Image (tube, rainbow, N blue to C red; front, top):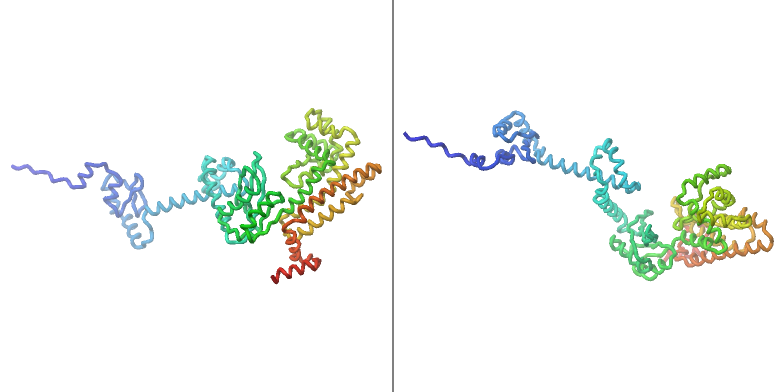
Length: 499
């Protein structure tokens, strides 16, 4: 009797025997109903995971009423995407929103001048109250190295979109950093808005390096040189030469405008460096050293002023060379309090060099009176310069229509000061009346020389200012000044209009 031979195994059985059962294999068996996500077998229509280890489980799910109902709903509507697309789109959307939150946070910190290191203090609050708060990384360096460059590129792109294709002005100023390296700031002005577009560190600062830096910046930002209508710099010799020798030729539609505030500041520096006022300048310098990094002494000085029933009990302002008016403000403060310094510093019993130098300047009553006279003169005579500088620095209203009048008033004020014998100010005049005839004559000669030096410096820059006629003619835009303009100004305006 012949034995019955077993049936040959199917191809699927051989595959199961010869390979490991995986979710991918089950998805290949039911491609229209299941798909794989990682180690899970997911139903396309029911949005749930299925046990893929048994085929019967998969078959039973396909025959279930809920699966049939969901499949029919999808087939009839034809709008709901497969599960794979839903999950992928959701993941990408979530990733984009988290990235947007982080970059918006970095942009907010940059605009508000908040250091990114403060993120470690803000993160717990954002985690608690913001849905996307967990998107902030725990490491601050990733914000600085990854997200900050992206935010910067986005900001520069938005700025250049506002500038390109429009008439613009180039404002250039040079300063120094903490390591005393030259830094050139390049600002673009368009439609009453100003944007810092470049920051250039230079080994040398001369007309060649400055002009090259300006042209390289405009070229890298794809700005048309023919659209530049003004180049604004200070009155330094290398800035004047940079425009005259280089920039004027490549920017044919531009005019050179030198900073009026810088002219006034240069005028004020003539008194700061005038030999007759050297002891006043030394007092400002040494008093800054007396209180520099000494908070306890500052508290004792304020308490000392309160005991003396002074109206304003505050520490002396610091004279900073890069901050206009700060030296004049320091002189004004010392003129009001110089008579108290000797008593306070003797009570300090300090052997520091700054304290000893101040006490040597105030060791006799005669020295105190002479120093007080100089401080009062500078304090009262500089008020005109301080007021003019504040007006020209203001941004709350247009200053171009009044700039010419402000500068002409300064010139008249300085030329009058070279001849008058009184009227400098109430405190200065009072001191002059107490002096003898010869002593008063010597003091007046020095005061006249101070005004003469200031007027010479003013005339040197204002009389040759490249935009002086422009400022003179812009007064026509102020209805209050138009009737007072000279006939020559009106005829010139008519010529320009018809030309």
